[in-house]
Image 1 (cartoon, rainbow, N blue to C red):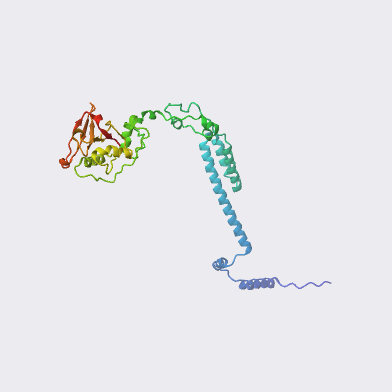
Image 2: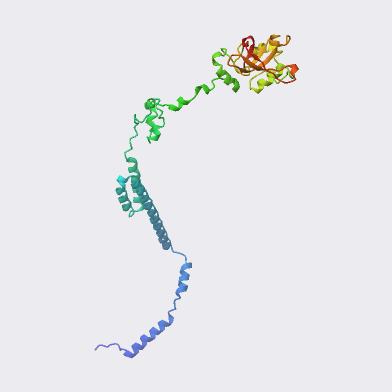
Amino acid sequence: MSHAAHKAPKAARAKRTNNSTSASALFVPAVDLALAAKLNEVAPMTRRAMRQAAKATARRNHMMAGSAIVALFGTAAGAIAFANPLNGSAALAESDQTESVTAATAITATSGVASRSESRKALPTTASTEAAPTEGSGDGDAAQDSGTVLDDSMVSGSDASAASWSMGDDSASLDVSKMSKSAADNPVVAQLMDANAADLPEGFNPNHATNDYGSSYSFSQCTWWVYIRRHQLGLPVGTHYGNGHMWADSARALGYWVDNTPRNVGDIMVFRQGQEGASSQYGHVAIVEAINPDGSVTTSECGASYNGRTFSRTFTNVHDFQYIHY
């Protein structure tokens, strides 16, 4: 005969259950959500949380870099398509495809575009013989006006000797006669030398010594006036050449051109002693102011008795005198 445990009455079991529930409810603390959030903010991150945050930041940066490169590639592809309409559709298709690739794929695609650009067939740059100006044609700027691109082979190596150059028609309009060929330092002398080129003495040096240190001639003397007038005309003259009749020899010794023919306005006309009313002791000098059509010369002169005033005479026996030119 077995013995069974005595079962408690249902009412008692229910009572015990309710009592235990009530007791446990009394010991559960109330959770303050705001306080928990504050504690989470100030609590230090775990190593696992730090690794996860770093991975999230790296993924975000990676995606941003990839998006920037994809956008840059799209812009470059559009520019290539605009510059080369024949390859426009292919460039746009590549741009659409690369928008969905990763950053590494976008970099590879960019390198591919650069290589295709470099491998494109270069435009022909050979020189056209018809575009080159012929000698004396006056079209020296024709190559620039036609838009022809000149490569290095046209100006270097063996091809350089094939180039022809022309100064054009402008050179024909230059008046060479107005260009001074003289080496004279004095510009007035340079112009006179050009005018007298056919008659210049052989080996004449226009830059000879002048012996000019300022006037030393007495007021109103013929030599005083000649010194002043030569300076007015920009022609060389010396400080002291002696008495009037001595001037031709003094000037010749310094390198001046001296002969018996009047050639230019400003020539110094030298009188011998007593010639044409000159002093029988000192001689005389004057300035040629004009060479007339009949070959005569008109002078400007001064003398001691004229008190600084000048006078003029005309001579037809012009070759009886010596003339100091420059």
